[in-house]
Image 1: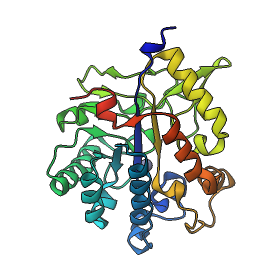
Image 2: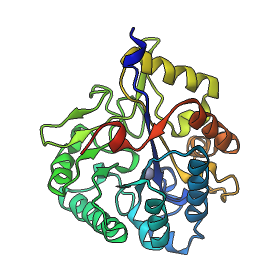
Image 3: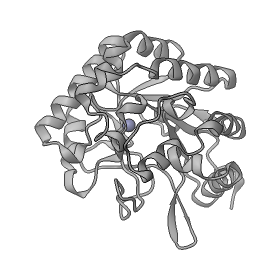
Image 4: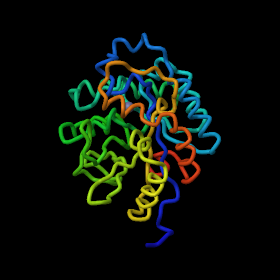
Length: 281
Ligand SMILES: [Zn+2]
């Protein structure tokens, strides 16, 4: 296969939320108690900015509106570092649990907040927990109407909390007009292996991720995109009591080696923001 057709740059994305916003802990830390939690997202996101500066890369930060309200200066700093700002909903409610009106209100509130803080249009959206599927395709209509140009909200894998295994695997234009950029999967051993980042990246040894990403690039000749969260490099975050073994395993596995793995990933591939890599204008 022609080496020259392999995309030169891949998309680096960060979902900016704190450890207590994750869906897996929603029963232990309900949204009404978020304001009483000690924030860690500002410090861990600034650490991400330092790491990105070290490797001289720009990325896309999908920011939770709740975080933007609590840390407005952080949003301005991310933008001042030259990164793209995207929207990750206001309160991390899965789109599958909202009515179209609730979804519109929530998304519009976050969008306005981010645009007011940066003074620039926000064109990218990522649903909390990749929560767009067959049950709520109306979400694409809402995103299109709000002026988003692209979404990266679907994961074509089988998973107990999310996933659209039969949906497209690569960037495509929805009938609603908006572009969808699915989280990458690697087809191997007769199944789709999730290789987009987050918990799976922490779980797999780095050599495996590197091999899977390289194999994806040469087999598919499509850009690759990676996602992670600032809390994944926050070794000192409080441990949430009372969550299930599965939730705790997914959240805490290999947190201590994440930053080192991430630096390897930043060194081994070339990175830029989602809108640049996927040529969204
Ligand atoms: Zn999230």
